[in-house]
Image (cartoon, rainbow, N blue to C red; front, side, top):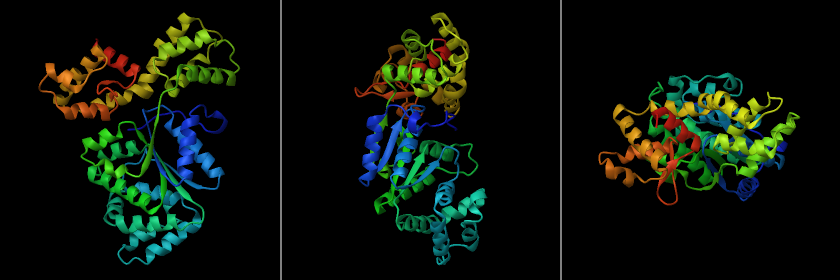
Length: 386
């Protein structure tokens, strides 16, 4: 899985999320760790980038790691090691050499000269996992023994876990490795190493589906990132227009754009604007044409494709249940598993939870479920001819 997004924004380009930004900064300065949750493309990475920038300006040493391309457990260690200050790296290498339990070939790789260009093969990854505890404790020791405060920022952590447990992953990893990573991160937090983890709103369902205890996420202050309001979406669109000297995007045009994209996801607004920026002027009818012929196909390619990929991970038996569940929710908008099961007594609760974990649907406070986004609902109805 890969989250193909626009580049995260920060500084003057970062808009809104003032409360979330203050919450994150205050929590970190008070010595806490964070779990930033939200649906994909809602701007979690931008929030992390902006908070990291501010904390760095305030004298903290920030280690930022994008986990979405990682598919081996040891890569987390190696990315952290790459980001360590040179003197810390040298101290780590020296400390590792004092540990008689570590093989020489691991120590030779974990040095500043070779690690930056090192590729992790399965055999080396296995050795790292075999000696996970002494290596993790060594890194912990180095992170804590710095004069400046080090804070880890781990983005797209759920993608990392999905990559590990993907049946196509030739490493043969499972929930065992996910537990090991989460346990290590919790151990580091308990020892005083701060971190900000960025994850899916439904990470708890992912852990539940893998029989992994949510206690491994203990010690984290959690904050949810919501969609933009209509007013925020309009302001984003107008700021984008101003950056290109476009003057024809009126309030009426902006309102129509918001109506067509269906969900105030920053990425959706940015995608639409990319096509609007090619126009010298635009009628409401032309807006609809651009959405149908350009924007929606682009969202299918760059966003909705993920849901087709996820469907491939369901067995034939599960797919039949997926059709029943999503067809029902698309018809009645909000429904509980019990509502659907009344008419289909063979439904499996695990499939329902898997749909939540995969962000097809989301739970509501009332105990029902709806599609995570209106555009996902539209995509499903089109896919099923409903």
